[in-house]
Image 1: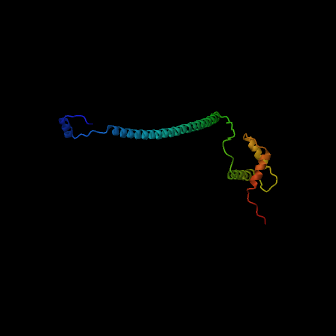
Image 2: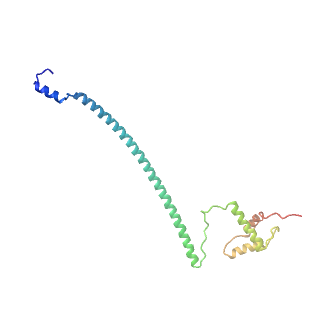
Image 3: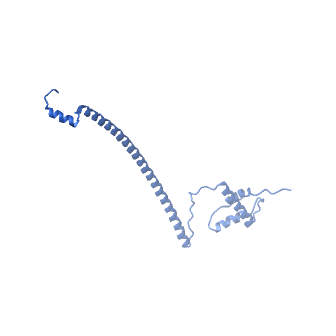
Length: 179
């Protein structure tokens, strides 16, 4: 810098061994490090925001699913409560000695082919064994007896319907062997 300095000061500075730094260079390097750190921080912030948004979407979907499950559960509980109430009413009628009103249960599925065949086998077996139905005869008094007995227990079924099911049940019997 070319200005006069006392020789004792120069000697004292040399004895410390301190170099005068490039403050502008230090500042520029520190500024670059700070800018890089800020850039990295912004990138991490964006990643965190994206993750939070993704999690918020999942939480929202889970909430909707929970609402749907809750609604389905409540419907199921209400349905079971109705069934319990219906059964309790039938039990009260039974205990009171009155005949419970039987409503067709529309929630049960139709009979399978195998179940239907089993019921028809029961029908033909009882008709032959209990009413003396001759399975090969074209006419029989068993049809009217069966319809009459059904009416006697408080149910209704006309003879044509009884005849129809007896005809279906006869088809399940083995064919008689001819000589």
